[in-house]
Image 1 (cartoon, helix red, strand yellow):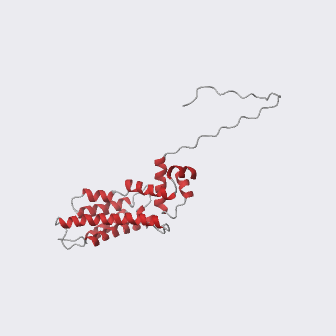
Image 2: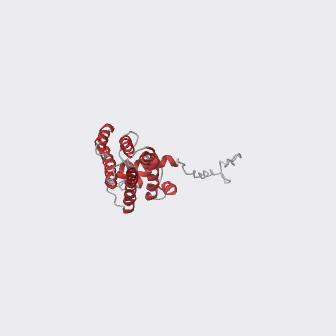
Image 3: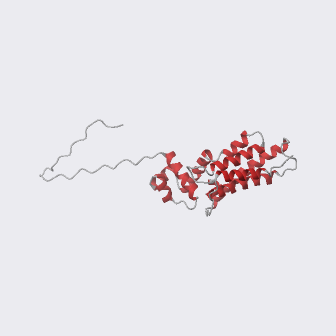
Length: 219
C-alpha cells in the first residue's frame, strides 16, 4: 500500500542554530524486470554463442540485469541454461515432433521436418541453426554436453519409432533399416544447422531436402 500521510518536515536548522544535516536518502527498491523477456534474451545469447562461450557477464549484459538478480531469479548459469533449453524447445524446436504426430505418412513427416528446419534455421530475428547443435560446440562441461546429446539422440529415436510403425503398416518396405534411416534424417537436420550457421540460405537448404528425399526407400 502507498501511504497517504505527508512526511514530517525536517527543520532547516539544528537547536543550536547550525544548519541541520540533510536527511538520509532512502534506499530505492530493487529494479524489477520482466522474467520472460530476460529469459528470451538469455536464450538468444546461448543460441548465438554456445554454452561455454557465454559468460555470466554476457548474460547480465544481454538480459539487462545484475548478477544478483540473475542468481535470484534463475539460479546459476547451468540452471538458467536448462530453462533456456525448455523454452527453446517450446518456441523454436518443437516442429519435428509436431510433424511426426500430424503427417499421415513417414515420408511426408520427414519432408515437413526438413523443410521447416530450413525455415527456422535461417529466418531473421534470432541466431541461425539449432541451439541443440551449436550450444554443444567446444563445450567442456560434460553434463551440459551429455544433456544436449541426449536431446539429439531422443529426436533420432523418435524418427526410428515412426519409421518402424511405417514398416509395420506396409508404408515402408519390410527390409528397411529404420535405424539407419533415422540416423540419416538426424544427420540431415544437424548438417543443415551447421550449413545455416555458415550462411546457407533457406532456398539452398530446401534444395538439399529435395536431394535427400530421392534416397527415400521405395516399396
